[in-house]
Each structure stands twice: as C-alpha cells, then as structure tokens.
Amino acid sequence: MPLNDLAIRAAKPADKNYRLSDSPGLYLEVAVSGGKWWRFRYHFDGKEKRLSLGVYPKVGLKAARMKRDEARQLLDDGVDPGAQRKAKNKVTCRDGDPDSFESVAREWFAKFSPNWAESHAVRIIRRLERDVFPWIGSKNAGQISPAMLLAVLRRIEERGAIETAHRARENCSQVFRYAVATQRAERDPTVDLRGAIPPAKVRHFPAVIEPDEVALLLRTLHGYKGSFIVSCAMRLAPLVFVRPGELRTAKWADIDLANALWRFTSSKTKTPHIVPLSRQAIAILSELRPLTGTGIYVFPCGRTTDRPMSDNAILAAMRRMGIERDVMTGHGFRAMARTILDEVLGVRPDLIEHQLAHAVRDPHGRAYNRTAHLPERTAMMQQWANYLDTLRSGEVAQ
Image (cartoon, rainbow, N blue to C red):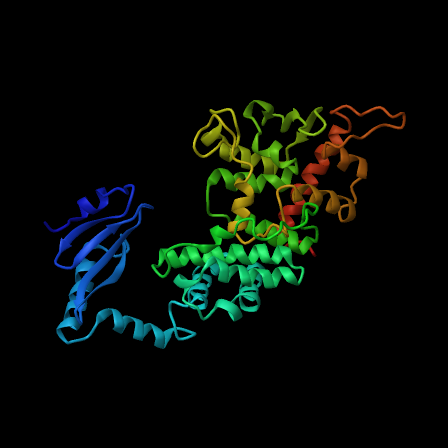
C-alpha cells in the first residue's frame, strides 16, 4: 500500500533501522536516530543497487516519487543513475572525489562555518589543511580506520602539540559525523581513539582582557540563537562576574530586584556575599522572570525546574558559537573584569577584590563584612555595565 504524509510523520524510531515501502523500488528508511531517508532500490547489470533520494521532510513524498521516476527514466535509457550521480559529483568536487575525507570536510566547513567567529573558522580550516588533509584527505571517508587516523594524530603529538592533536581529533569527529549523516560513512572512527593521546597540560582559566576582543566577545554572546535561558545566563555572566557554579545555581529567593541586590553564600569562601545589580542585569533578569520565576532556580535545567542548568551549558553554547576553550571560559569573565576594572577604568583594587568575593582584610587583619563599601561597589558595577555596553556598540575607543 502506498505511503501518505500522515503515515510518514507517525513513523517512530525503533531498536534498529526499518523500511516503509511506498511503490515499486521506493521506500523510506527510518533510522534508530529518528532520521528518515528516501531510497530507490533498482537492478543494473544483474546487480541490486540503492540510490539515496534525500531526507524527509526536506524531500517530501511527492518529490521523492519524482526523483524515483527520473532514476527510472535513466534506467530505461540504459544508464545507471547511481554511477551518473558519482560522475557528476566528481566534476564539481574540489578534489575529484565527493566521498573523500577532504571533500566531506570542506562541505561540512562550508555549511557550518558561516555561524562561527571568523578567527575560529580560520583556525579550524588551517588545522585540517596542515595536519590532516595531507595524510588522509584523499582517502574515502567511509574507509578510514581508527589506526589510520591515529597515525595522523601521532604526527601532531610527536612535535609536542598535544592540545592541537586533541583539537584535530575533535574536528575530524565532526567531519565523520557529517559523513555519517550524508551517507558517506558508517561510523565515526574517532570514538575508538579516546584516551589514545595524552591529556594536555592543565592551564589557568583563559580570559579575554583586551577591550577590542571583549567587544567582539560580547557581540557574539548577544547574537546567540539557542536556548533563551542559556542566552540570558551568557549575557548576565560578564555583568556580575561571579564564579560559574554560583551563576548557574542562582536562586530567585536570593535576588531582590526591587533593591537591585543578589545575596548568596560564596561557593569558595563560604561567606555571605552581595552582588549589586546594574540596570542592564536587572533588565535581563526581569525578562527571564516570567519564564522561570515560579521555580527555584533562575537558570533551571532544560529537562526539569527542580535542578539548575548543567555546568557545561554555557561552555557548550560558547563552543557552538566558535569561542574556543583557549579563548574564554565561564571563569574567564572574572579575570576579564578584574583586569579591565583595574587597568582601564582605574577602580580601586580593594573594591574589585570585594566584588570578586576574595578574602579581603582590613589593616588589623580582620575580614571585611559583606556590606563593606557597598555604595562604592554599586557604582562600580553600574560603571562596568555601562562600559561593556559602549564596547559592544563600538562607541568607545578600544
């Protein structure tokens, strides 16, 4: 019985791939992952072959039947539709083989790099061109073994560039996953190489501290198109520069919007701490409150309001936008504020240290209480928020 759109939409993934037949030769393959692929089964020179006709719903039922009819016409003319497609692709493909690793990688890069920061895109393509393509670029993406890939990574490792080797493996994994999605590979061989390269040395939390770089970072964060909750957290992070765990576990009960204050216990010193909230911070929280204000957490987990967002949510979002881990981390907003407030805005260091919830003591060795210099710190936080706004808008000399 021929398929219809209702039956196609209702098809759910199972424990293994299965097929839904439509009409002679045409069927829909439903993958375990949930993907739905149109395929045309035919015979040529006594051999059974299959031709991919696209992914549903991008290719609808009517379009799939038209593609199948076009393939049948080629068969009637004595032409193998699969062979013709490969020949056509080889003409337009950069290196002559549309299934080679380099071809797949460049196709992946062209598709996703427009959404990345330019510097991030340049680093990735240079890494692939310098360290990967010369060794496996011409090989069929679906025939590259873990051992072949490990040899590539070992060359990078042997010159002492351990971190680059890890990044190359990560980039290759992205390419292989794209190859799987476009039916040019069966699996990602990088999963077999976890632990094969020594871990990179632990470094201090990276931070962006140059004003022009901060401006670009802020524009990138404000341009995030994913989860609204994550977007709010990323926009608030540089304004309050608290520790990442303190931000993600922020509770509405601790935030006093009327008096523009956020009170909580410092996760490191275990002492009470106050964050004066700038007008910009209040605006973000006020925008978010209708969505999460009835729950405990300001930034709840995506699956339940009973838990805060994961400790990787902001980092993962930054990585998707092309902000690499050697450029900025959630902890880096603290270093960014500490440096610029001191060196650019000329704020008293003791005020900055108080706001960072560091253990600041008076001349007699006594720890200052949480309300120490609160009016000055409130003015500092508003000055900081205003400065970030002018950086982001390009209104201040950098």
